[in-house]
Length: 635
Image (tube, rainbow, N blue to C red):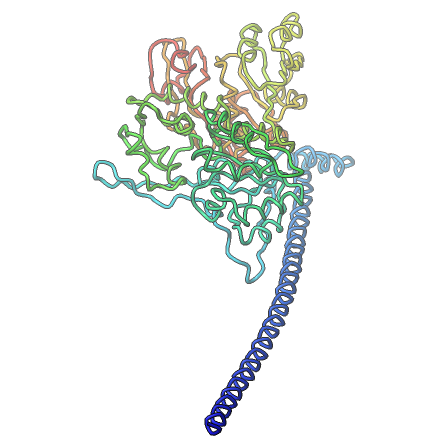
């Protein structure tokens, strides 16, 4: 029995030793695990420190890049301003009055030298070309241009009825901007981008990951975000995440206005994201009530006001929705809207298609903005091509408000300056003996701020002021029998104050929309002078109405009719009117060609040249009708 107890004791001791060994092993493992945990904590702390240092380094790098970019921009601007100063000096030196002054000064004691100098000063001198702002040079290694910088058509083939047709794509202009003093960061679909890109200096292509670096290069005054359904921001707008919150916070820290623009999709899809913006605008008037309810149901974040609500509808953009034609003739068929705009076309390609057919048959229910864009491109809408009806539709599309007008309203509503260049008009008219007819041509015109009238009629100042609308300044001077027509026009030009100067012939007939239609060309061309090379004329001796140069509409040409001249005042003063009576317009056009001044021929409507007889005009124009011209021209 004692042996059994001894064996039992030995067994117990063996088990105790085994347990002790296992406990020791567990203690060792626990110590090792604790050591690894401590090492992991140290590594995590080091990683956090590294991340903080990396973040600080990235911030310093972004600040350095932004400072470097600003220095490059400042240097480019200083170089540009120096070039402008040189150009202004050169322009003054070649101006006729400056060269005349130099000739008089150097030849005052020598008649022969004076005569030679005056002859030289009277000759046309080529004006220096104005410098243009050049893109800021990119440093080596910079990333490529952001998406959207290239915004051009990519397709030159259309398929109609199984047949492929080649066409030359419309070239989307790169500028100029309506408000170069204003910078906007924009997230938009291609359609929205095309409408907005000429209204300010526009930054696009930034993403939720790089917005801070991209926008820091040129800090915007405004952030405008459309309800996009594709691209890097689409998911952020449907389910607001860190990227959108970070962007709005970045803007709030810098006092940047933020606007959400609803153009499609349901209100519920975007209500959560839109509630974080300062302002909400919609392109869909029918959604205003739903937006009001959605925004009222949301509690504003602490310290923030509820977003304001307004409307920013689609409207025609003159830079891209205009009657500038494609190269070659229009496609000789009336197309349905489906044939014209297949779904695969990018928006720059859509702008090409707008200008392509002779007419488009739009079905009931077509969006009004689509109809307006088509009309603004000069394309007849309907089953019958009708140039006169198409011209009226173009006028109505612009009269309903351009995107520039709508952006004016937006900027005024959110508290940003909406100032931009104006197109106010001073009109010069020389009375030909029938003052009532003279005043009847100019009184209905829109956009006129001043009438400079040369007339010898009794009580001409009083009669002119009574005929003109309120707010139009009337300046009346007597004619001078010793002066040429060009001399009198030059004298009247010195009295003009408007941005544009129009010369109207008191012998002719002008429609009430004449100047409004003509000045519109300055919205979509780079011309300094606009007029008409295509126009209607009526010859009383044969009672014939003719159409001169019908193919000359909407094109840059070397000549336009002097009675249709509308020019930038500063350019016209630099040119001056030639001191002749007959053919002053031809001499002026030659001067434009010599000086590189761009001349643009607009539409054929709104003006009728009235003459008793003109064999040259009768032989060089296309016979339209035996009867009055007004039904054809004044639409």
